[in-house]
Length: 239
Image 1 (cartoon, rainbow, N blue to C red):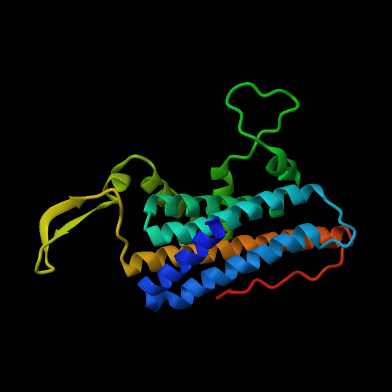
Image 2 (cartoon, rainbow, N blue to C red):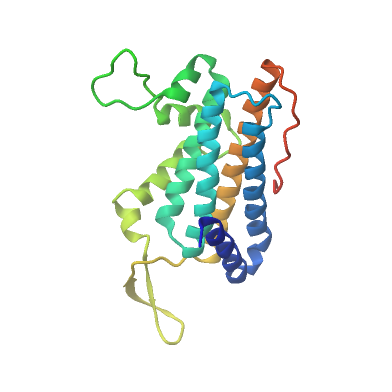
C-alpha cells in the first residue's frame, strides 16, 4: 500500500470515528487534491517550460507541505500528538519562510540556497536565515492570529523531552462503571477526544491553506515579472 492509499484509508477512518467533523475532514481531503494541481501548474504551467531559480524554493516548500499533509491525516487517525505537533510546527516554518521571501528581495538567495553551518563558513557557502527570526516577522504580519511564536513554542514543548511531552500519553484510569479513578494509565499510544481532533484539524487546514495561498502569490509575482501568462488554479476546500 502506498502513502496515498494510507491517506485515503485514514480519511475514511476519521469520518467514521468522528462523524460530526466530516465536513472539516472533507475539507482537508479536498485541499490535498488542490495542492497537487497547484504543484503541477507552477512547475509545468509555463508554455515554454522555463525553470527559474525561485522554482527550487517553491518546489521544496510545496512538496514538503503536500507530503506532510498526507502524513497529518495518517497520524491524526493514529492519534499521535508527537507527529502532529512536528508536522504543524514544520508548516509554521514553511509559512514564515514564504512570508519572508515575499517581503525581502535581498534575502531570497539565502532562502533558496542557504544552509545552517555550525562553525566554519567559507565564502562559497550561503548561511540560512534563523527560523525564529522569520517566525517573529510572521507573528507581526498576522495580527489576527493569537500568536505564531507562542503556538510554535507550545508545539515544541510537546516534542521536546519535558513535562508536556511526558504527560501526552497519560490519562486517568477508567473504572468498570465508566467513572474515572485517581489512578493513571501509562500507555505507548494516545487517545484524543473529538475536541482535540477538531483542534488539530483546524490548525492543519488553516496553515496548509495559508501555505498554498502564499505559494500562489509568489508564483504570480514572478510570472508577471517574467511575462508568463497562465491562470492559476483555485484552491478548493477553502473555508
